[in-house]
Amino acid sequence: MPSMLGLTTDKSPHGLNSKEPFMGEQNHDNDDMGKQLARRAGDSLTKAYNGKKDKKKSSRRKHSRRDSGHGDSEDDSDNDVNASRKREERIRQHEEDDEEEGDRPNTIKERNSKAAMEGETLFWRALCDKPSSAFKYMGKDAVVSNYLLFGDKNPRGPKTEPTLEEALEDCEGPLSYRIHKSYTVEIGLMAVAVVYDVTLYRSHGPPARDGTVKMKVQQATVTSTWRQVASGDYVLASSMCG
Image (tube, rainbow, N blue to C red; front, top):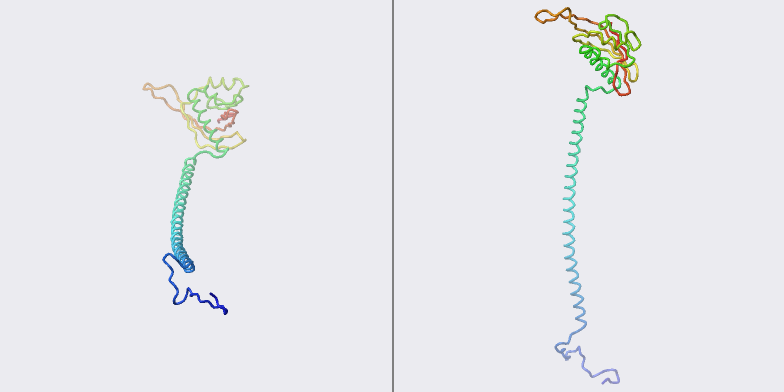
């Protein structure tokens, strides 16, 4: 009971003669403090463990980046090598194409000149085989003056007497021919003038008993013009052999 002075005769629970707590009774303050300490220790251990994990992950990422960078550099180097090889192959192919096309005419003048000389070759070959067949290489208004074929220098054309076609049917062609160095001049967008020397080989006199034939050689200078028609072919427009 408390006294007048505020003192009490009750035993203090914290004194020397205080009773020990029964089994099962706990000090809540001490428990709370222990729990806090345990919680802090667990948090520190968790942080340390997580820190180690983060370090491992970062090191793995660095290694993976290095590996990926190394792979990318290898891929880039491989791509560069393949690109350089392709460029070399294209250059080599282009050079081979240039070598193959080195003899081909690349300008209009060269193509016209080549076409004109091809026409001259076909024209003289037809005269050797059958003179009348040479008319198919001529234009309808073509004019020809050739004393080696007709025996005179008079021109023959579609309006002459005889006409060019009739004169070719009656003349005797050479046995063979040879065209020497030629000169071509472009006289229009699709027309060319040609000048060259020609050698003709003819039979001279009747054949001998053993079948041999004497040859007669004739030489002349030829100037002719060739033009391209709508079909793209070149035809003889005029020719003079003298």
